Length: 223
Image (cartoon, rainbow, N blue to C red):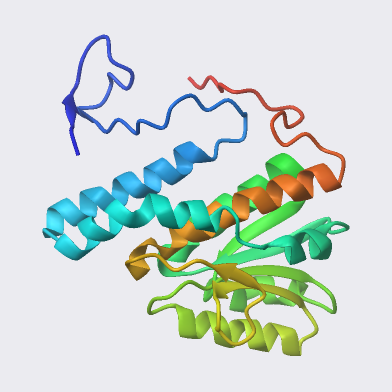
């Protein structure tokens, strides 16, 4: 990974170090590949800091996994959420950032009031909203948080919720396949890659253009 020191003319000139993502042009308003590039950038930084040869090797093989992940069959989610106007998206640990991203994309492209919570947080106040048929998307990739998320999925099904469980194939109760990567720390990247084609298809199914969400612009100016 190459870093560039701050430059008066470089984008991000207000920071001391700049991490170029090399994601290319992001044509749609709802960013996707730039988010994945940020996740990979963070993983490369962690691998460098920890001198983790296994993670570095896994990152080299990640593009091939993501190509497969982009073709994973998440069509069940399109059918389940076609008429939804609200849902919870749940993750924990390394899966929480992709849950937050997924909730944002549901809002941007589909007009669904999606809220993201950690697997622990949702079991407090938000639990009161979960009733018969309430839709939940739970990201449960491999890792130390997975067992608790699988237990949560089972408990929510017991309450009558409509649970969409994203997990590696062969996981009990999984409905949306997560393609495993060479390192479990990278599985959330594969999960969000599979999510993006699904949410695009869902947006089109409800009559929206996912590349041009209403009321949004490519650049938001803040002061």
